[in-house]
Image (cartoon, rainbow, N blue to C red):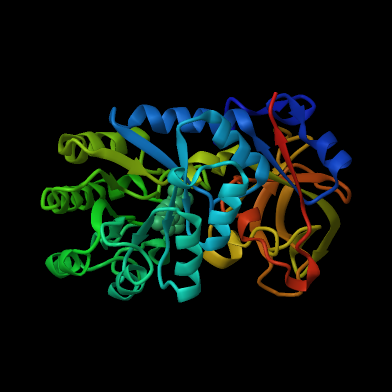
Length: 387
Ligand SMILES: Cc1ncc(COP(=O)(O)O)c(C=O)c1O
């Protein structure tokens, strides 16, 4: 059971999150229900902070999970800012009590409407197109501080379409001089890169290369206050996954970026919240057809699109008897009117019956925050456990 943590444990009465019995919680709250562990979020923030150089800052990527209670845990933790990628996220972060200076706005393909909203908010921006530089300059005074995002020109990510290098984001490295020229009316205080989502251990070389490239750009900007390495850490979706370890990532930060003497910033989302969340669903149908035992549950890809949208696996766990012997192989499917609405195939589970509660793991990142209302099946509960 690779997915157990100090917070998520297996007991004789079933799964518990920080001591709370999840089956009972599901019965009380109704399903589908996302449950988050405040303790695990704090643990993850501690671990990221520990891996980073002394002068560093975490800016939580709220796109991963923007639940009010989760944002409260992060604000109360202290010293952690927000990476916001839309005017809506900026507004929500402000509403959650983060100050404008604690928020960084980092998005691509910005409309004039986006730029107007972010200027009105007073939140600092990171820009990555000549077009945005030109249109932002028309809205702010000369000398306004900005960050610039570059494409590190390496490909790394959990799957090929989750690698962000050579994609739509960031200025080309080869255009560096032209970018500085285009930004000469601003004070360039930061440089940013983001490699991709779900960096694996074998991406260590690509990470070294990207951080070294960032460092060499940084040495050419005397006004620099920070360098930002984006997110990409902590995705583990099956036992065989080997995500890039925090220690290996931290070593690369210390080697390439700490010597610059500026603040080292990161924007983790997944690594903060992913394994802090569980999705509880109820089985409504167990039926054998064409050689397959189908398990239908009361949640589909409207509440967590990752498995269908990105092909990211989830672990299916029987919440009341996770450690019981395997009784069969099941295909677990949702209630959305699409053939693709499959959570997992060939899952080995203890005996599953109608009315049982299953847990899908991990479900803290890019699940509720990406929910849609497809088929008007977008309802879910969210509970934060904070002992
Ligand atoms: C620019 C940027 N920063 C941070 C993140 C957060 O990434 P992760 O959840 O992998 O930590 C993303 C995710 O797409 C991103 O695009």
